[in-house]
Image 1: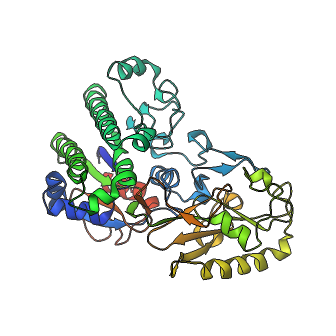
Image 2: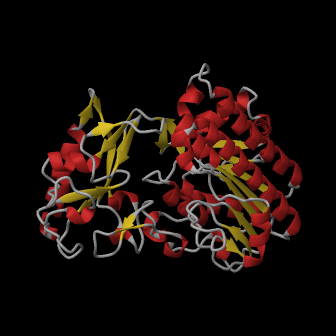
Image 3: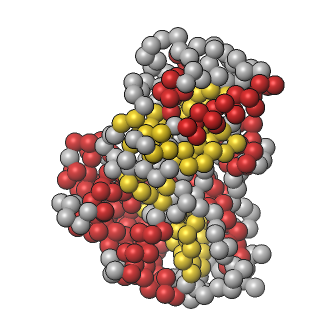
Length: 427
């Protein structure tokens, strides 16, 4: 049996409910056609629902305990120094690195910087520090520069002017489309993976424009998704009936009500002590600290042997975690509980990197955006974002009728590789 080609189109941050509704009302007519022909599922994101974690799970088919990415930031082992994990930090191979994967084109998948050699082409997505190191093979770089290819929008523009942001968003999208068309025609591939990240940026800054039909940027919000849908329609026309076509997102979105500064709360409750007030970085923690937090809602017990100024003996870890859970369950803002659910790391993860995981992860109730800043001077506030990530409502869409066993009723991001393999006839 010949292995089928596979095409994966990612819409970063696109919620299940939004793509379902916009397909139904005509905003995304090509997506509607695919839904009618295939299977649409609500999909669970990673915990935490961070793009770097979720995309790492999508491309490896593993959980963070196996691939080693637990957040957008992490701590250098044995220190309190923040680092930014990248593609070199990934401990499990992506599907395109398998010996039988054939030739792959990988365009704009987040957390694939720096680009690494592969049988095919890779242009890394967010966060890519420079185009040369984001691209393999290097011979592609001049063409990308000629078309003014952009890895990402300038988010700072959105803080200055939403009009500037939308223009930059459109320029970035057009360059992405040009790159996809060029690589589709130029390369002989077995797997083609393309991710649109502008959908996430749009939702962060203009979720209120989506919800409010009278908002001055409501039409602009719809127009961006219509343009993405046009590309989806083009891809659907290009693939053959024998090809596997998968659309998906890495997480969902919802309205942002309040940013919640978890380390400020830990200070108030006596879990976090500082040597410098106000603290500027995690290194300003005092040795008496029991627990500290990283984005978004990742709690770490300041354990002896794990950290340079660890104060919690292993025999006291459970007691500290129980006290922490009680405090977090009691946390309310404007009469609403912040915590939806708390997870011990053993409940979420398995694999050789479990000991690098946070000791406890908090999922927030709707509208609360958990932040790990140690500089915060208040428990909660609101920044420029109007939308935030949500965990339970990513989506998965497969363009073909399937038997019930092909796709789980409630898939999660780490299921994508195995689903693709089944559809391609690999298992």
